Every structure is written in C-alpha cells, then in structure tokens.
Image (cartoon, protein in one colour):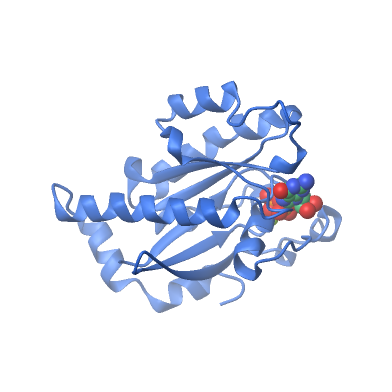
Length: 217
Ligand SMILES: Nc1nc2c(ncn2[C@@H]2O[C@H](COP(=O)(O)OP(=O)(O)O)[C@@H](O)[C@H]2O)c(=O)[nH]1
Ligand SMILES: [Mg+2]
C-alpha cells in the first residue's frame, strides 16, 4: 500500500500528543505542562512517527503527525495538511468539554481546503479521555452523533479512546488504517484517478519535505 499520512488535529489539551506518544512508545507519557511551552514557539514543534503493522498478511505503513503544541499559536500552515490523506480529529469526551468537539469544525474546514485530497480527505473522530466518563455516559454523545452527521463522518469512524489507560487506542488506529486503505484502494482501482498535483506529490515527494516540517527528522 502507499505510504499514508495521517494527522492529529484538535484544540490544545484534548490529548493529541498523548495519543501520539502512546502509538510511538506503547506507554502513557505525560506531555510537558503548558507553562513550559508558553515562552517560545520553538519549544514545541511538529513531530512525525512512522508506524508499521501487518494486519491480515497486509503491510501497513502510516506516518502520524502531531502539532506539538503549535496549534495554540494558530501558526499551523497549510503544509501540515497538504500531504495528508486522513485526519484523526480528537476531542475531549468529558461531558463538560463539548466545546472541544465543536471547535473541530475549523480543523475540518482547514483540512478540506489544504489537503491534496480536498473534500475527499478521510476523517475520523476520536473521543479521548474515556477514562473520565461515568458508567452511564454514552459515547458517542448525541452531540457527537449530530456533529458526525453534519460533517458526513460515518458512525464506524467514531472511536472512544483513552490515551491515559491505552483503552482502544491501537484498536482504533488499526481499524482506521484498514478503512483508509479500503478507501484509497477502491478509489485507485475504479473511478478514482489522482489529480495531477496529488499524483506528482505521491511519486516525487521531496525527501526534505519531512525534514523541513518535523522537529525530529
Ligand atoms: N484523564 C486523561 N487525561 C489525558 C488523556 N490523554 C491526555 N491526557 C492529559 O491531558 C493533558 C493534555 O494532553 P496533551 O496530549 O498534551 O494534549 P494536546 O494539547 O492535544 O497534545 C495532559 O495532562 C495529558 O496527560 C486521557 O486519555 N485521559
Ligand atoms: Mg500536543
């Protein structure tokens, strides 16, 4: 399968970096508290990690991107979204954090505008911090269900996860990887043809592109 690029999007504090670290290390890693990032943009930085996994004899290769706190400065550039095929939209599923769900509208607009897949960028919605929910609280909430209808995100692409406990994080990622593969494969084998721009980017993506953006590369 082609290399897939998936970005983590959502407001500061919902747990994007913790999800990223959970995938990268398999553990809960406490991210630096906000005050240690607040003095300088250069303290944070976009990070990427390529995750490889064989599922049902098929090799998957997904590069995950995290904003590293830059989302707080509204300094996300279109190059962050440009090469992504898919977005993990993260919100805090705690009942008093609904604003983090509604804020995702801006990220969806941005991704649909800036991704080379345009409106066809593949979206999934992750309700993080499921460990904070009470036993009677349903996920996705009615609000999340309405949000998904509004943005045409299918029911099976909502995942309830906890980056703190690890609950469902890898299962969600594997499920989403399989879904992306299905969409991309179907598109490539039937009516879908790559736009000139997308075709060019897939075949001759500059090596330096990742290094220019990722603070670790
Ligand atoms: N209870 C709980 N806290 C979490 C979870 N994921 C992240 N956090 C905490 O939420 C805070 C913000 O997480 P972070 O990953 O930095 O959020 P980001 O700004 O979206 O990257 C940190 O204190 C994390 O330890 C989770 O699943 N459950
Ligand atoms: Mg972060």
